[in-house]
Length: 167
Image (cartoon, rainbow, N blue to C red; front, side, top):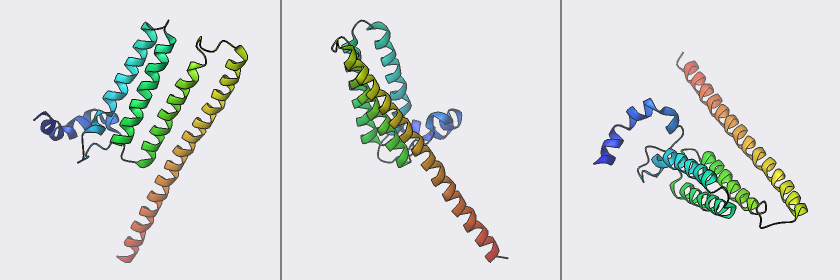
């Protein structure tokens, strides 16, 4: 009953809180998994914040919780495919994969690795991996903008041709 009511009121909720539903596959006939995207996102951020504040002396626990949350988020994105556009789902997987890899890098900055030179080397690797991921994200954004512009151009060209035919 709650799901039926929620689906009937979805348009009203979407008008009020439109940015929470931006590019989400909210009218999926398969499942309601995409509707949980914002809730999962905020819950995860709160959980990581609480772990960071209250378990500040237990670095291994923080790293493990970050690893598990990244893996769970990747499985959610793979299973639910919450976004309408494939590129957005791929971007989310790229970013979650990077968060997982960066949480593995964090292990090297705990008491587990005592050699300072090793930490510097791992820090340099991490720096270059951040540059690569930022570059990939910017490339995906530029690709999306160019693809949208091309589609809009084709649509406007087709409309213009149709107007000329009917004159």
